[in-house]
Image: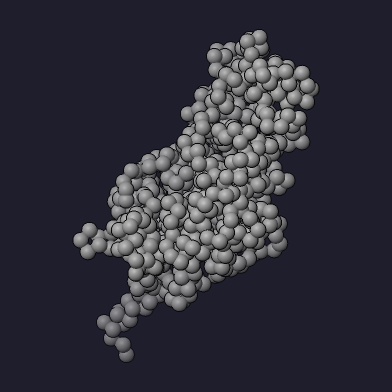
Length: 615
């Protein structure tokens, strides 16, 4: 017969074993988070696009990404996943907390996130005992640079290799100084010449992330690890042999870039540029024959290829450790990179490859493979979704995002089953230029200039504004109402910081496009006496009624003034503003004196600080 003492020890041992088993049953989580990543550089996304939309930079000018493709084929891929703000800091804050940027304190680049913010890592650690780790770029601790593992941990057990900001190219663990970051210089290139595959940023951070996973496995704990890679953001330098893999390509200007430069059709006011239409052919030719630009793109492609190889290393390691089936692997980015689409580089606009980001999720034990989700979601939806997938409740923790877990984990039936009408919202945090409502089929943008609606199915290039088309009236009404409510509730900068914006289109409005019957000319030029005689022609004055002084009527609908919707009946005290005069010229007695774009340069839109547009 077992003694009382031995019986007690057996019970304790059994409880320990059962507790350990329960912990091991908890799904693990690994997030690979890149910086400024165009989803068209990923093969799994190109598979869903026509060649016209997947090979924008030339026939066959693509990066092969077999590991990311494998991740998508074995899991789910989102075609309409957006960052809540296409800018590093606010996007990251929302991803971590499930809140809109203004609620986190980190709504501008280099703002510090409020110290009382609860992240999904906090909740996983506190509720389920997860071993949490963060490796790589954080960008939520203010101006610190690099700012190693400083400030609050925000729920991460291991953060030795978390740094605040900067796009460093090498890292090492210096015996004297500890974690150390290096830019690419002659000195650092020489220092790491023989160990680039160990010390180059992407390789180094992935290896440290794998170490955090192994640390959790040694303790028999479920893990949640985020590996934040600073590439393929500039500076556009990658280590050998990736730095020469794509030198042989000639990178064309994308179709939408050519259209924008030719203003046929022109860009919206929230994406304006200063290139003269008469120079468009020359600019396009110079860009397509520019060796610096070709090198720039070849390095971006090389960075993507290196990221893909490191994702392969991660997947192989999880498989070798026997935890691949019960580990959720997420691949996404903080924002996109237009890479010359719409004649722009980088982020900051609501276009698909600026605000749209890759989102791939694999979980063999929980998500059917090969699933394509077309429903629109955004980065504020990540936190509530991943917590729900991991079976974690979070009462008392406020989140603005919605839970997508039901759609992700539902059995895959047919392609159209994973698409529902759902509106998500995007804000310009940097310059208060715009706010956007988006579904998988339409995208509505409000700004200080005219409202803009893209029909994403009919116009996947995003070049035609169909806002004035009466057949879209009900869609506009629904999305506009949802957007205004969200802007008001969550303090979008366009509503709180911009004095006047057009909520509806003015009755009198000149097209921004090249004049259809007058090549290389636009409406704004008709105020010049040299070109004003063109206004005698019907096709010209119909396209340019303001410049030709053929229209003067108050607009129906609303204009946003200091965050309030107003009609022309209630704006008399605001007529000193040029936009108000444009919207209500009769009320403001502006017809005789003239009104329109000449009152403000491009409706008050500032030129971009970065005028490299395609370079």
